[in-house]
Image (cartoon, rainbow, N blue to C red; front, side, top):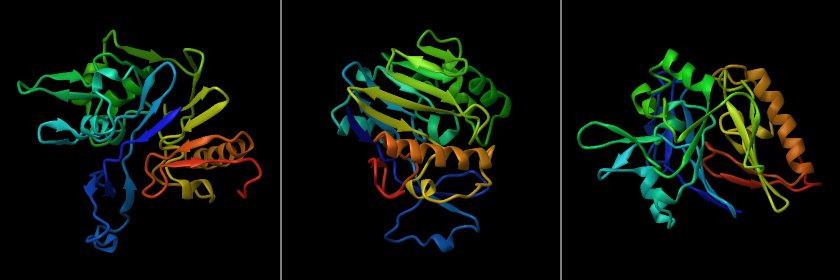
Length: 251
């Protein structure tokens, strides 16, 4: 399987939930509001023998009239029409901004016209119930009553090689994915396991729906991943988006 990180850049975010671009060469984290977190925003493409998979959809920011997500795909030789499945962990705006785009008349369309989108049904309902600032409902409307959207209910598998599990960790209906092909396992923990450093320490994050559960899950996945040589994908890691675990390596 081929993994392609699609970096949208570094950002700081504080209690306002506004993502502000950050340039590590000129910006000082200490000058940002107290409590600001430095994060990468980084969807992934995984190319398998069956599919071109997109894991989460970024912030939905545009440059020169085109979604940055689409530009990043094209730079890696992938057109939006080639994406066959979009696997959504949850619908917070930094993960779901690119699920759709707005045309010149102000109408929204799904960004990937030939893809099937996979979303937890209760997550979609929760997004519209909760709304701004964590969610951007207008960007998510195309996920409703759409034949290209598969609404999931609980745990399961897709095409026999993609497993999904609802954790309720970072958010009430957050889900994680395992992609398994030819003896290789790729694990995408999204915001339950957003950064490599968090896998190596035990702490409860205040921004998680169930921070204690996230902490325990990270420990479980870290140990299981090393036992079974998983490849971890870290959506918010500035330096280490992809990590290959190996059995016997120091935890």
